[in-house]
Image (cartoon, rainbow, N blue to C red):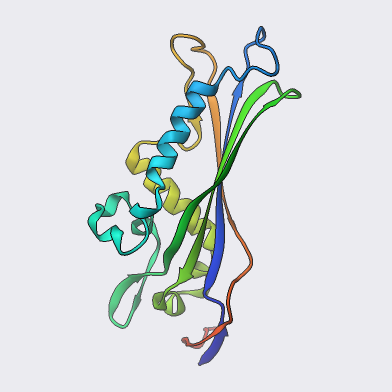
Length: 190
């Protein structure tokens, strides 16, 4: 069956770090800056575009590449990934003090472009179409390999051992880009 399908999807990763403030700190003083900045620098190092985008990726160990953790399907007798990255770039950061919850908050964002590969069209469409879930899982798997926290950073032993930082990671898919292409796909089963 021949279908018309978009195959380019912009996406955004948003990392939010929230650390409770000590009671004696002024609301404008970022007391968690060292903990948050250390984590953010590790994220930035892990997501540098040259590590993930061809042709440079061939020189980077597979375990350090986001695409290694994308789902696969069998197409043309070979197991191939469903997706590839075309871009992965820093998209800004913001630091603020949330005076309502009394937290130091830092957010960083990365934007990228995800492309559907030929194996995507041969995969189960319900599984293959879970772009956000696959992006988040690939990122979490990469961070697990790198031993980067994905949900929580314990408190600083010297200054605030009882206080930790909560991490929230979200993958968002934007609207499809470009003109739709024509693709051959298997007829869906009932």
